[in-house]
Image (cartoon, rainbow, N blue to C red; front, side):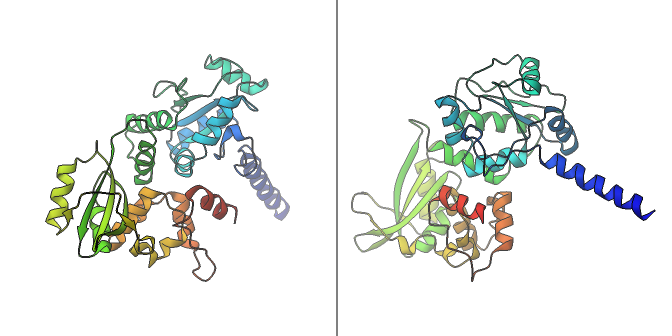
Length: 324
């Protein structure tokens, strides 16, 4: 009886180990795959899609590939929040378009060309397209739009960290309506707290203009117009101030509330810093602005051992913490 139980346990362990091996190692894989851990078996991905009620995001990619393929992996599939979204909101599946075997079978199933530039399809648990295939446009914004549309079509809510990714990406769109303005107030810590809470505000910077404490606000003019922002500021005892060339940045005073919290030990994007600092100042929970991995890191933090990362390069600090 004991031997049968032992064999049963071994079978379970082996099957779990075998299943785990079907994913790529994001820390040691071809650059064309970015930093996403991909499943490599179509049928396994479809089963998981049904089990977890998540769409399958299929990357048809040449591995190793041309410069377009490498750039797609490096520039689109390596942004930390993009990686988080693909791994947590979808079932990520990579199909190599320059291989035979099972890869070629799936290539033929979807009538995708071999030895081609990157293509992304987002499909349901029946393998059917939820949105139009992503091809020809190799920007992060194009992939992001398809991801959002597919989640909305399936009636899923969009996590705040995924919305933040969209705001981050908006600053990279040529001719997008990114604006900048300045407000003076009695205390720029309060100014950052209040202004950072507004929808469309992407970043706040503390500094001085003359003898006045000032907050520089970078905002998306398509999400909030200047008049509305100024009305909010004036209602909170802040006044617009002209000019920007004489703005003297005071980096030590920036993100005051993050500096006095455990969130300073996390790698944070610019928009995340703005929203988290504001939430902390307003005594609200900032957890909604964190990705699943950032939440996991937060639970394990040890102030005596961890390095302050919030004010360091987002991509580099993310990679460094991820390897520990």
